[in-house]
Structures are given as structure tokens and as C-alpha cells.
Length: 225
Image (tube, rainbow, N blue to C red):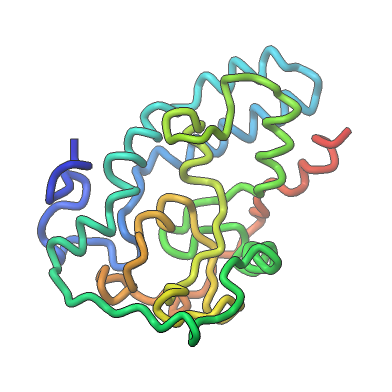
């Protein structure tokens, strides 16, 4: 269990071996889980709830949640414990951007970035798609709970977050020039540290991965029917 330790078995202790793009590289099999989830949505849209539920059970939700809780969520803390870089003071509240939450512009961030995490490049799923799916499925097999253990694994790494590259309390602005799309894992993994403290590159130095992926937004109209 890495959560209570000073080092992480997934991260290792040599910074030279760390991923410089994200707090912690996700397992390769994560990507396949998105494909399984998309299949489940398609079954639900077609009216085949039974097949949808069977497909949901194929997702390695418990393993994802365990990785997220024990490794991904703690990656920033473990990096900082090894690098031991000096802390950066918070900016006085009077000098911070008066707008803290990016809710009003987050969809613009996600669309610009092609619904991909700008850190680990994992596919992200539209928040509205996930909410509609939960409502229409109406099953305990797929929920966004109040705790890690009551939240389905897909949400732990595919729920999109508009992340402040420079933390808001360190003086970062809540605008398109400082916000990038992030999976929940990378967002929580950063844990309020600066990218310099974590030893990762500024995601704006890399172009977003743009392809045909759009967060499954094309499913919204069908899920509303």
C-alpha cells in the first residue's frame, strides 16, 4: 500500500525514470476500458439494458479505483517527497484571480484539447455524457459517489477537469492561457504543487492530441431521448 509510504512502487525512486509529461503514467490497459464503456453506452442507447449491464461488469473498475487511490492520487506527494524542492508561497488573496472556478469556460478548454488529458493524453469523457448515462442506466453498477470506493473507476480517470497549470493560489489565472484539460488522476496527482515542484513540463509546450475523439458528445442527443 503506497498511500501511507514515502515512496510509490509505481513511480519508483529515481527521478530520471519518471514521466516528464504527467505526475504518473497510467497503466496501458486503461485505454481499453474506455472502449468497453463506449460499447456499454451503445447498448443502452439501443435499448438493450441487459447487455449494457453485462458490459459494465467487464470494466476493471475495482483495479482502476485501487490504482487511482494508492498511486495516481498520491503521485504529486511522492514526487515532492523525493525531489524535496522548496515550497512556493501562496499569493496574497487580494492578488489572486477573482474567478477561481473554471466552470463557465471548461467546455471550451475540453473542446480545444480534443477531450484528451494534456498531461497523460488519456481520453476524457464529457461530463454531461457521464451524468446522462448514470441517470438513464439507474444502476448501482455505475455511479459517481461521494467517496472513491463508491465512484466507478471510469470516472476516476476519464472525468474531465479544467486544470490550472499554474495553481490558482500561486497566482495562476482562470483563463484559456492557464487552463488545460486534465483527467481526474493527473489533476489530483498535482495536488496543488507547481509543475516545477513535480518535475514535469508545461503541457502548453506540447500540442494537444487532436483526432476524431470528442468525449462521446455525439451520444448526448441519444441519451436524452
